[in-house]
Length: 113
Length: 113
Figure (spheres, each protein chain N blue to C red):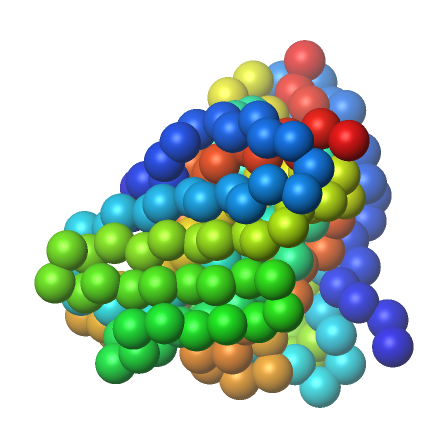
């Protein structure tokens, strides 16, 4: 079956612009996660959804970052007033239940110029 | 923040040799997982070991866990060129109140044919 799909695969934007990153999880997976990975680092947790609600958004760096999952499936990570420091690979993952292994997408590489 | 710390940061071996990677972490955990990441791709789950387990095997993979030392090791036996990738340990903080995995910085493994 299809894995986790993330679009776009690459996004280049100018400083100050707004971007949206999309994640299509594996069908039937109730848990969805967003992580951010900088070069040479491991993924850093941003936000976790259980169904439609954000169960834990403690990893979002500031209020420019927001994520939604309105129907409990597709999720969108939204970044306002982008800064050069936001440049990274944004990874989405889903899992069947809490405490199940995560299935990752290939990520969206965001470059803020 | 990064909880796990992998050691070494980089490892280069000949095909057929064994590769050992270590991970240390800081908090009490429910389980520890190892993931693999090929360049430009998402992470792939390899193996999960629970906090009450000491050793687990899966194919050519052997994982150990020492909760008293807050450390784990991943052994890949009879390595192949296709094992070339970055390997990350990930832990869930049992006191965190929600399921978020914390990843280390990874070990970059190069297997030379």
